Amino acid sequence: MLPLAFAAIYKVKNIYKPIFWLGITAYLAIEFLSNFYNCANHHFVLLYLCLATTIALAYKLDFDKILNYNARWILGVVFLFAALHKILSAEFIDGSYLGFTTVLGGFAKPLHIFDSYDLFVNENAAVYNKINESVPRENNQGIFNTPFDQFINFIKSFTWVTIAAEVFVAALFAFKPSRVSHMFMLLFLATLVFTRSETGFASILCLLGMASCNDKFENYKLFYLIAFVICLTASFTKFGYI
Image 1 (spheres, helix red, strand yellow):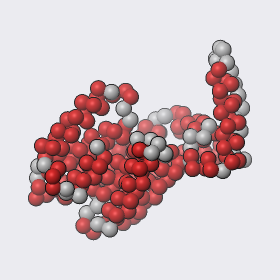
Image 2 (image 1 turned 90 degrees about the vertical axis):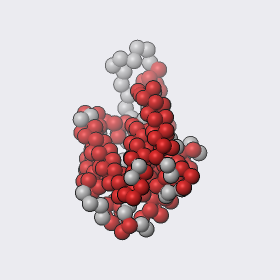
Image 3 (image 1 turned 30 degrees about the horizontal axis):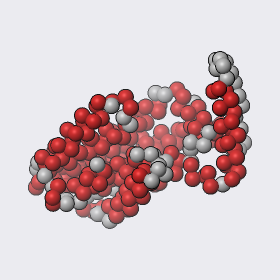
């Protein structure tokens, strides 16, 4: 579905019809809603993008303007609610989520190329498995190794930096986007892929980024396109998550 959305943005004529995208939107709605509790949040963002494309195609003379406007607001709302979700999550705010994810190797996966990092993760995985396999598991405790001193303070700081970055992106795209908006968005995408390997989500953000580029920022579409191809390739080759 992602290549189809990309093709629509670049006006490939054989799928440049509202009825086609209305069908895609209806299919995605049925597919995602039937699997509501197991469907990733960013899959619904794709649904909104397809719906926005359908609406924009119904007004061909204003296609670019309508799609651009909708893409901006989808980005703004997505990042705003992402930040609110984190703020309302006690486990995220106190650093527990990022800390736990990091010590078990689920954070910054490219660091696995270093043997010392792999050893650190494997030691913590052994502790976690021992706790998880204990019967009963209630009140069992284990001590995880941390990669460096002041790790807890670093994680708490990084938690708030993440929230601040998402609020900043939301604000940038809610108002009139500038070069700063797209530069910061591309930086955010690179950070997201490096830290969480969420290449499926990043692919959709790339599409929204392309759609939000007006004539003044046409050159940024190339950067979004390159990022899109990299993320999509990583998703389908299992280096990331679809």
